[in-house]
Amino acid sequence: MSKRIRKGDQVKVLAGNDKGKQGVVQSRSEDRVVVSGVNVRKKHMKPTQQNQVQGGRIVEMEMSIDISNVQLVSQDGVSSKVAIKTSDKGHKEVIFKKSGQTHRLLKKTV
Image 1 (tube, one colour):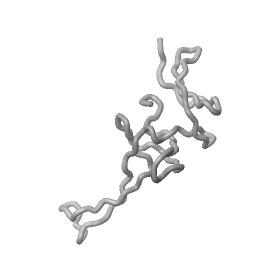
Image 2 (tube, helix red, strand yellow):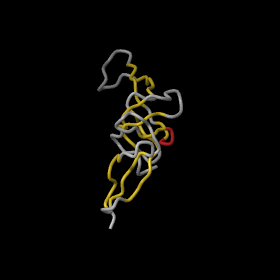
Image 3 (cartoon, helix red, strand yellow):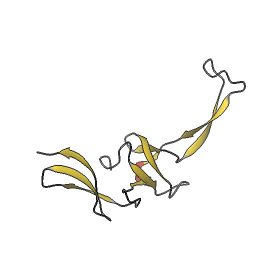
């Protein structure tokens, strides 16, 4: 999965409270991703020197979800499993299995 989902990809959530929602990957760590508009939680912030609001404030933050709970979405808006294949020219490509569309090139192999 590590090569398939990257920052900026459109993904669909497969499991959890936000199942079915779509969003763009904002950041990614080894096995977790932060998706815009998904898994939003409220965090209570104390007043600090930088945050002089009386009584603090409540901030909504997008929390990370496991990378196994998201699936790539094609340009058509259909989520699908993907495969990595090597093209004739020696490029590794991510290809959607349902539509056969190429998502992106990974790298050129020798």
